[in-house]
Length: 327
View 1: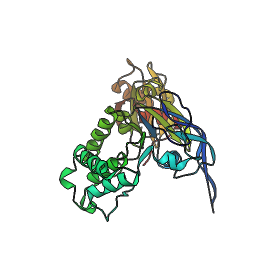
View 2: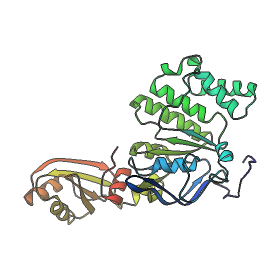
View 3: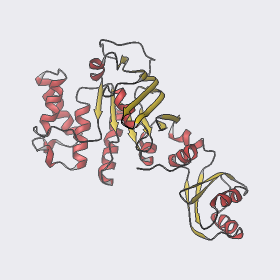
View 4: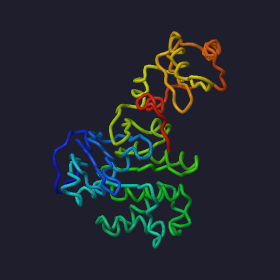
């Protein structure tokens, strides 16, 4: 780890440590507790996901860890540097890709990289060399002299990631990096993130896309209303539900009564009602769809639709909060 002022010891494999991290915003409507006593530790070289709906506190948490938001309470360090006591030093060891496009429209594609390197103290020759390397790595070499306003959404996002790692940060923060991208651009950015991870880059990723967190992250923290609800590997989180299959039933009538009735079937571990839909969770060897429909019909329910999927991170979130993730 580089020598920087304000550094303090951290665990050998730790690169981020937060304890009791809280943020309260005060406005005309009173106080809003965006983050509430969050404890986190991120290991060096992992992709760590912050998963939750909009308003859960993900962006505020990243804001505190990247010095843009001053915590109301608690402590946080990145790369061993206290982000509150030494924000200037902390900024040298982090790279940030925000939700909005912050590319400098007065500069072309290559200049956005080159001047970022110069801003962080890189000699001109090193900054040019690094710019050429990143343009090639992120498949932007043919757009080096293009106006950034001409870039597609996916290209602009790749350029922002390249700019964020220009100065070789200890941690790269990606705040909902694929929000608003088309499926092809999203998959291309996943490939870029995967390549950075294989090269040893520590990445903190916020997202409200279940599949994204499951596909990319080594560990995932699920948060809502600023509180940590669960933290584990994606596989570990899915195992915590105690089921491997989710069945969705849409029907007329008292769905709470339907869930209670279906829960009596062998192999059903739990159930709940969300947005006028009954969900039941099964272990291997549980009832078939035909048996579930037959049981519902025998109970006087008219079934309109059924579906079955493997247990997902969304299943975990519903199990923890009783409501769906919403954009």
